[in-house]
Image (cartoon, rainbow, N blue to C red):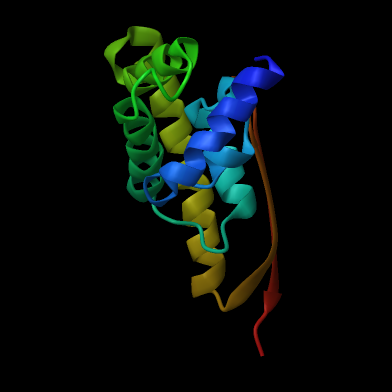
Length: 143
């Protein structure tokens, strides 16, 4: 994506900031796929939220972008947002979404297990790629 397009995208977030997760103003549009979004949320969020909450945030942010119309965002980005929202409509997309959901829920469950065991999560790193999941959790006893 060229710099002019990226500048225009960042500009619209000042207008629609309430309906869009901060991810969309910090990450170039070409990376807005669900796997990248999940990795970002797991790395940046203070609390690991349930899958449905994070997935709904991703979808609602994309919908706000689409409602802004092609006059405020480039047509290519508008089309990309539409494709992303239709991820579950294709065979390949539904498989990717299922894998992302399973990986995210596994990480979420590990996070909850540490909290239940009386451990404080002191570090979390996660990477989502098309084929690989990288998860690291460290815990310390709470005093």
